[in-house]
Image (cartoon, rainbow, N blue to C red; front, side, top):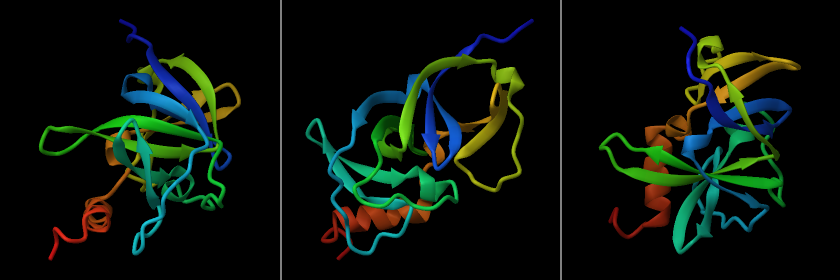
Length: 158
């Protein structure tokens, strides 16, 4: 029995074609201003304000081992929903070069990867090469989340 096609948002990141599940995508924004935070290391580049919320901004180029973006940042920002270990949901801003559109893929075609990049959930053969499947829940490591929390609320750690 064939699996149900999965809708994904196809994006271009540092020359790679990537896909984020559509059901995890909240919104696509044009280039926006990113506020840098001292002490953060790539792939976290700072934060942005979106609908009265402060969202961490993650440079997907850096997360995928590519050359990081240079200011002004990327053409598009993907606002995604992420699930935390304790069950709550949060949002992240993923910086991408360009959003190519919404497409469908067969999840059964996904092949595991040995890339060693936690955000990569697998690869799918695509007409012009491979499509890299991304898992937004794994965009940040626990250490990066802790550093981000400290940078956004430095007084809480004192």
